Every structure is written in C-alpha cells, then in structure tokens.
Length: 333
Ligand code: IMP
Ligand code: MG
Image (cartoon, rainbow, N blue to C red; front, side, top):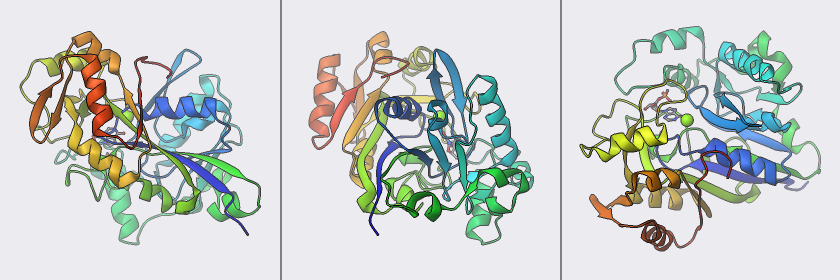
C-alpha cells in the first residue's frame, strides 16, 4: 500500500467570489489532473467560467467536467438532486458532454425540498436560500439523508476508497473549495458564515491525507466583496459603488449586489497562515486600474498606496512566504 494521491487545493481566502473558478479552470488546462474534487458546500457556490468564449455558471457540478476531467462531489458536500440534474442538463445544452464524468460520494448529504422551503423566509444572515444550513444541521444532528439512498443519483454514486485508493495508480487531484475563509463555519465571521468547512482542513476531512497535498492556491481579489445581511461591511466611501459597477459585483447565484470594501490584509494574512497557502492569486487588478485607486485595509486603518506598483510591493512584502501572481484579465489567467 502507498499514498498514490497528490492534490493541489484551490481556496477562497476572503468572503467567496474571489475568482476560484477562473483559477481552477486555468490549472485544469495547464496540468494533467485525473480528478477534480469539490469538498464543501453545495449549490450556494457560483463559479463563473468562460469556456470556449461562452460564459458557463456552475453551482454544484465541479468545473473539471468542462474539460473532460472526472469530477467528484465529496462527502463534505450537500446536494440538491433537482438543482444538480438541472445544472447537468444546462451544461449538456451548452455543448459539453458530462457522460460518465460526474461522481458523487455515497456519503454526501442531501438538501431536501423541506430544507429548501425552510430557507425561503431566511433573512437573519442573508443566505443564498439553497437549503445549506438546514441540510448541514440535519447531517450533524444525525438525521440527514445520504446521497446513496436517492434513486435519481444512483448512476453517479461512488465510494471514496474505491475511487481513490483501490489501486497504486498515481492520481492527481485538483480540489476546488466553495465559498471562502471568512465564510468558514469555524474561522469565519460567525454567524455570517456558511455551514461547511472552507479550509484546507475541509479537504483533508473528505478522505485525503495531509501528505497528499502539493500546492495550496489561495485566491483573493484586489478588493473585498461580501453578500449577506452583515451590512456593516461596506463603508460610506463612494468609490465602493464605482468598484461594484466596474467589477460587475453581482451574485452569480442570487444576483444580489455585492458589498464592496478595500482588501482586508489582516483577514488575508490569517487565511494564508491557517491554510498553508504557498501560491497567492490576486484577481481583478484591472478593476483597481480602472478606478485608479490603490488602497487596502490593515489594523482597522485604510492604507493609501497611491500606485499600482506600490500596491504590488506592499502585498509582496506583507506575504513573504507565498508566491504571488497578479491577474488582470477578466477571463483566463
Ligand atoms: P449559505 O451558504 O447559503 O447558507 O449562506 C451563508 C452566507 O454565505 C451568506 O452570506 C451567503 O451570501 C454567503 N455565501 C454562500 N456561498 C457563497 C458563495 O459562493 N459566494 C459568496 N458568498 C457565498
Ligand atoms: Mg461565487
């Protein structure tokens, strides 16, 4: 017996919507992965991917499918069968064959119609109304429904041990995290969080040992955004509305306008430390170019860096143990 799995993990380090989908997409194209794995969350996520010039938004389906890579929804996820099957149909009608590529861990949990209904009236923390909280609540209360018991999902069901450890054949996994560090159930801004683990630990809990991890890619944007009921997020500076417009900051799942602020250096540093991030991708640099503002937040203060060059220098100094890549293109890296 040997450890035959090597994994790269892509994580959001802020409040979600950092552009993880773009990073995943680009890594899948560059490297020879045998699997893409989603390890937390459910249809609350919204990955916007540009595939052959076409905009495809995925919620439940791991984006590896768009590149013909076998894609597994791990046991840390929750699945709404109806939304998943609809999404598969949508991807098929965009001309992408998903045949035999989508796999669901038999012990992933189900978001039931009752869970979805329960969330219709939810506004306390401003969820995506995809039944995520109720499904995880029932999982942890040990009254949940396993994916393997749902007839419509039968053709997709796999066992994690069989899928990843039944031969010595080397496997190369790209894990894509849902949401982001500030939404993590343990480390996020409770109660304004999601109900799953958005950290590298969440990936390990899906059945991948620490030794399997190669690189941890952390993703942020050059500025901060958040959707939910914590209205203290966006300050009064009119620049935030400009950034929202320039950056097209409206939710991929719910269409809600995202609140905007300057990049939170303290949060980002903590996320890098807690996840062992060794590659940092800073997305949407082009938006700050457009609005000609280069500011960050640190220690409760706004730091005005005055130029793009100074902004880059500041981040490079602040996060010395990670290789930083600044990304400008709204599409592929
Ligand atoms: P839930 O995950 O639907 O329960 O929502 C909990 C909080 O996480 C809310 O503030 C949501 O807006 C936020 N959230 C959940 N998924 C995402 C995401 O993929 N991107 C951004 N915010 C998210
Ligand atoms: Mg999103």
